[in-house]
Length: 319
Length: 295
Image (cartoon, rainbow over all chains, first blue to last red):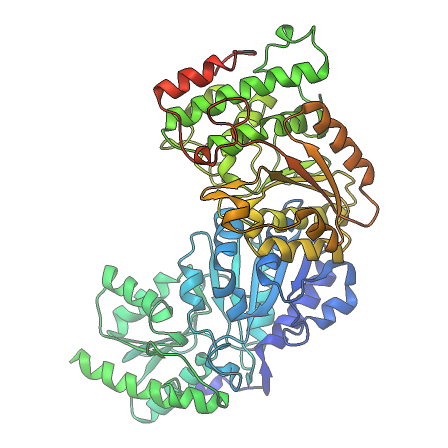
C-alpha cells in the first residue's frame, strides 16, 4: 500500500507556500502579504511582483509585522506574514499572544525554515520549539505540512477559515508525493496505509521518512498504519484513537522537540482515552547545530531508520 | 457631537457651550474612574484621570464614529488605546458615548465582566477592537488598520493613545519607522506625556530624551498640546486632521498631569496603579461634583 506513494521530484515546501500565495492573490482580493526582509527565502517575490499594492515589506522588525497584520484584519483583510519559523514564533510570542490569539485576529503566520533541516545556519535559526509555543495558545490552529503540494493546498485552504493559523514548513527540497490538486481539510488526518501492528503518526518532513520506514517494516513482516497528521491543533483524535485501538501501539515522528510537539499531544490523548505503548521520534531536549539536512536528521535520530527502531521497540512493549 | 447618548441627560447640559459641556462630561468620567477603581480595589486611576479630557473630546467632538459597534470599523474613525492599563477612562468614555450602558461600569475587573482589567475583545465589549495591556503593541495594530483603510479607499482616520513610558518598548520604534517609510498619513498618534511611570519619573527610570526630536527624526510631523485643556485638545486635533493625507504620519505630544482633577493624586506617580480607599474616595468625589449622573 505504501508503494503507491511516489515522489514526482524533490521540491521545497516553501515554494509550495509561494505558489499558494500567488494563487490566492489572483483569487482573493482580501489577501495581503507581509514579509520581514526574507521575501526571496519565503518565495513571496512572485506575489510581491504581481500584487505590489497588497504586499508590505516590514524590514527586519518582526514584532511590528505581527501587530501590523493584526491591525490589517480590522476592515477585512486576510494578512499572511512570512519569515523564518524562529522569528515567526519565539521572537514575537507576546505580540502573537495578545494582538493575534487573544484578540482572535484572522492572521496567517506562515513560517519557513523550521526545524533541523534549515541546515548549515545552525541552532540559532533551527527552532524546534515552535509547534509547542503555538499549540499552547488558545484560538491558534497549528499546521505542519509535509511536501510542496500539501503546503500549497494548505496555504490556500487557511484563507477560508476566519481564525488565527500557524502554518509551518521548511527550507530543503524534499520528495513531493501528495496529490497535486488535493483538498486540504484543516484538522483531518490523512491515513496513508492500513496496518494492524503499529500506528505511525508523522508530521512535516518526517511523513516521507515514515513512508520509507513503513516500507522497510513491511519487509520485516510488520504492517504499519501510517498517518499524515498535517494539523497538530485541532488534533484529529478520532482517526488516531481508531487506529491505536486496532494496532495497540504508536510511534510519533516530527522535526521538533519531544517536549511540546506532536508526540506530546498524542501522549496526552492516549493518556486520557486509551493508554497504549508510545515511542517518540523527536529531538531529545537539545539544540541543533550546523550540517546538511540529512546529516542532522541522522545525528538527531529523525531518520527513517530511527522510526524503524522505535517501531521495533514499541511493538515489543505490546507483548 | 456625532452620537446621541442614551445615558446622558442632555437637558442638564443644553445651556452650555461645547467646551463647557465636555468639561462637565469629563468631570463625570473622573468620578467614574475613582469609583470604578475603588469598587475593584485595583486598577490604574492616575493615567486615566490625566487622559479623561482628551478621550472625552475625542469621542464627543473630534471623531466620526458609530456607537452601534462593528469590529471592522469601516467608514468611521477608529481609536486604539495602546496603554491598556488606563482602561477605566476608556470604559467610562465608551459608556458615556453610548457604546454600552453606564451601569456596566460597576462590573469593572470583576468575574464574568466584559470590562476586563485591561481591554480585550474576547468578551465582545462594544468599542474595543484589540486587546492591549502588554505595552508597546498598539501602534503597530493601529498602523495596520490604517493600511487597511487605505486599501479599502476609506478616508476616515485612525487615532491612538500611548503612554510616554510605554515608548521604552522597542516595538514602538519599529512601528514609527514603518509608518514613515510606508507614508501612513491617515493616523494621528497621541502620547500621554505626563513624565511618570510605575517606578517614578521617566527621566529617572529610563530617559526618553528629546522626544519631539526623536519622532521628527523618524519623519513624523509633531504637534504639542495641553491634554488637560479641552479647548486646546479640540483645536490641536482639528489641526492634526488638516495635516493628514500629506504623506506623513502625525503625532501629538500631549502634556498632562497624572491624577489631574484630584489634588492628592495630581502629578504623583504613586497613583499610577493604586485604587483609592474609602476615605480617599470620599475626598476625591468631594472635589468632583456629579454632573450628568453617577452609574
